[in-house]
Image 1 (tube, rainbow, N blue to C red):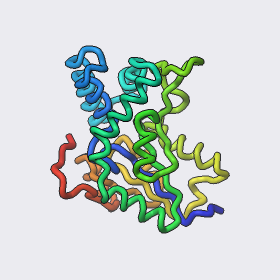
Image 2: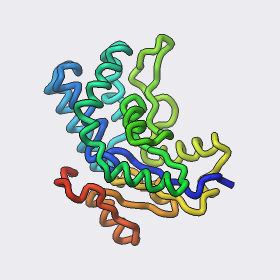
Image 3: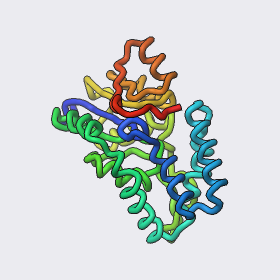
Image 4: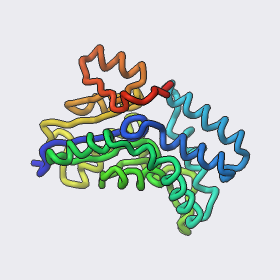
Length: 234
């Protein structure tokens, strides 16, 4: 039996953050002249976000652009870019209400993890800043020299892949999802429907219109974590 009282899983983008960290990372690189042609990079970024919101984006399509950005710099350069990105873009978006939601589950003895499609290079420091030790994210592949290849390592943490990755993570701890009498997953997106349906307490958090309608129809909890902020979701 698990030593934790329950399982609490959190999507990241538009759930614990009031923006999409992948989109903002690409935009940051574009506007600071680190992503080749800034206008072309921004157009590609906008198109990918539109396709994601429509639920028609594949993990491979996203990786082709997003993970390709990690090929633009040497490891030391990428680290400096990430530090700049965290300071300028992410830190202002780490809001007390998100920290409090995570802390509530931690204080009740929950096993907590962030489960995000955004790659681990971008999201690792964000998870740490939110006080969450466990991160399940899409893993960017590296070559023998430590440089990023632009490809995905293993199963992407995306759509049904999130369920597989969560089960693999729990299995590595000698656990199964079914070991928990209560499990939560907080998400804003219809792309996360497989994992929302796999837990006992799905929470539509800052939901897209499609997820809101589905959640209301199924009687799921709807949480407006950033109710005081202007809604920028499409």
